[in-house]
Length: 392
Image 1 (cartoon, rainbow, N blue to C red):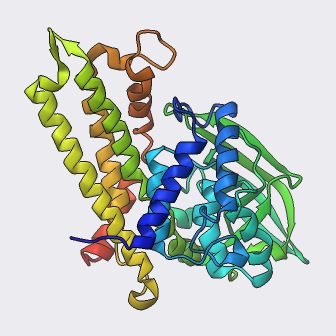
Image 2: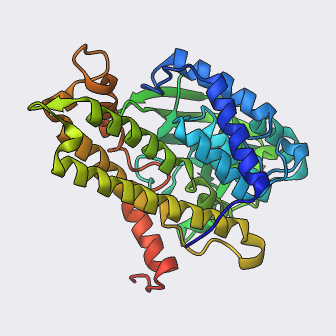
């Protein structure tokens, strides 16, 4: 595939790149993002500045906090942000929640919620996963029972990706009808996070991600917070998942890590010779370069396909997220092997190489469930990509 960008698009890329160069300290490292309140607060400030420029949600109309640009421009902005490994505190608002609101929300809901998301002024959490309903979305058991002009919620969500900043709203899916097949009885809701009856229990992970258990006990909200059609939540969610999984920054984030690691191999000697002179090291690094470029092309193919959604219809298949999940573990494992025993030292140890970043990212790479497990993606690709029949 051979493609290029317009002069205006390259100008946008240069502008975004300059923004990050000017805003971020020379020694900026994302570090343990979810568990560092100071780092999250700093990134939240940068997020707000990006939002004021319309760069958080550039494809939205201006009245909703965007710039009315195409998916290509959004891909460029995210690619540049990814190089600096920026992980926005309101990732859930910008990605799954925003597109869902844009496609299925009422005009009142759009005007109420979208501008704050687009400007980086609100924090949303996507609350879908439950103890018995992760990949099996249809098995959601959180109950929402109609009671006059309200819905009353009882149940639990778990492993909800979060950060130390208190959320403003929860984007969640609940069971509103007992029916077979089960996916026909689910509905989407936008719930104020401080509603009485909601409690949160932190669940730190091996990868240093902060996740939450969220409990609902007689939580009462107005029906005006229902998103989309009653009992059509499953279909609405499936439609917006394609926006959640497209992140051109995933490739540039890996590229930045690789560039830093290559420089380390040039400067570090083993047995009197630079690591970069070892043929096995060179072969390993060359393969990683190829793999990252293949990932980048997959992500841009999907971005282009989304930009043609009105002409070509819903996304046919998406390889970028799947390939990225398959790729990230062997990349950091290869770096760990090159570092040897030093690779096991964590951030904070005076002996840690590259400030312990490889060890940290090796652990982070183990959390491949975000935005769908590898197994679930294989099922989707088998059906939508290869046209294989579903097993009965």
